Image (cartoon, rainbow, N blue to C red):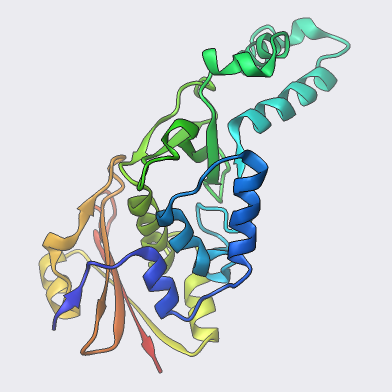
Length: 259
């Protein structure tokens, strides 16, 4: 068994039959709206990912983006309404104090106090973290992706993935493995795919049975385990795998093929 791990998340989605011609219009609109240039890496992923039902419960947005500055503007309006009668109640709210500071200076001066990000996702379940690309990195071919936890200061964005490609693949692997939701299983079964999941506490033996090369698994910045995804041309099968020592059954793999 020879699995090709040198594939992108966008290529995997295309193999699964996803393609949306409206994606080009969507991405062109984003570039025009924010006066930015989106990288080929981002465009190649969103051509099949735009509005993709497989990713409807994933930690990525498939039909919208926004900027951190837009979020801040919304917060300024919300805070003004919330504390308009008793502004002293917001003295212990760091987000309120920072937003009020920014509200008093011209927007073109914000960049001296907080870096802007193009937000492309958030954690689907709790909504306590936002994921984005630094606006200053958009000219890079494969820029890093950062995250902001709602408990941290608005300026405290931290590295999530070293590249956008890694972020896309991480999101796709977690989705295909149904780590939190059964969305992938349901969507793929509906489209006529045979979906099988494997879990084991004997990582090497289980990987051998599925045909996974453990050396192909890549560690994640936040210690979310090691993940990989590939295509077995001989078996005409897409495989995704994760090894996470924090789980009771550390090895997990999904095998997807046409019925």
